[in-house]
Amino acid sequence: MTAHENAGKVWLITGANSGFGQAIAEAAIAAGDTVVAAARRPEALAELEAAHPGRVVPVRLDVTDQEQIAAVVEEAVSRLGRIDVLVNNAGRGVIGAVEETTDSELRDLMDLHFFGPAALTRAVLPHMRAQGSGAVVQMSSMGGRFSFPGVGAYSATKFALEGLSEALAQEVAGFGIKVLIVEPGAFRTGFAGGGALAHSAPIDAYEPVVGPVRTGLPDSDGKQAGNPVKAAEAILTALDAERTPLRLALGTDAVDAILGNLDGARGEAEAWAAVGRATDFPAGA
Image (cartoon, rainbow, N blue to C red; front, top):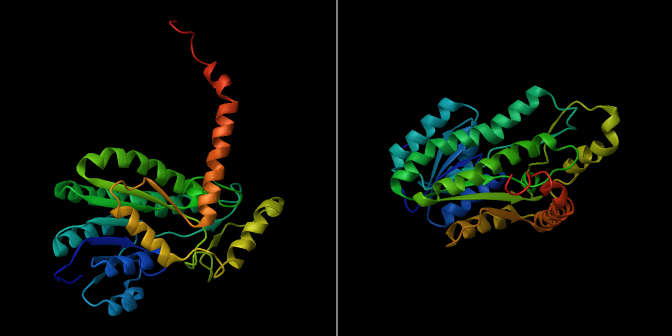
């Protein structure tokens, strides 16, 4: 990382070499901001850096490496004076039934999608509290609000991240810090293509329910309705709003599916409300 005079806000974006990370970086730069672009292989950021000289600071970061996290945050603050927006974006997809998913696969995914973002968030918060402002953007998924066969492990990590972030938002609001959970549907980010998806070893018994997901997700690559550039613009719009939402669903598929899931959850809760209430001690007991 080299010192240079930064303009506007300073963003720290993980997984900035492709997909949502790259789109958000480019949107931030277009807004006049400076981006600390993090990736496991910083050489993958060469094109982004060359396209925006002096506005992109590439750094090597494996978000599962606690020592790297601390070093990158401290270096960013030392060189640029502040971190205004953290975007926890690095991640990958895994397909497999719960029984098919090994303990190692689940723990590795939780390190990437939960423990890494949690550590990065903890690392930037003292600086944001000191400056009295900031924003933490957690790139979740519509799969962080509900789940379906074949993506249980992935959803589990995103559910955990959303639960942590919901509490975080209430804890840091008084310090002038915003928390935004982004829940995209299917976007053309490369998430599902080029061998990017990991697959648990299949068990034949689950082929009828998991098989369509195992083949359907890769087949959808490049055909998704979601535009990452528009998603990045929506994220900046939400962050700039006077009342930034806690959750932002992106893509018609995500919006419709989440609304449907909420309707179903409310219906179920109401149907069983009397049973739930009947478990209390009598009033005054």
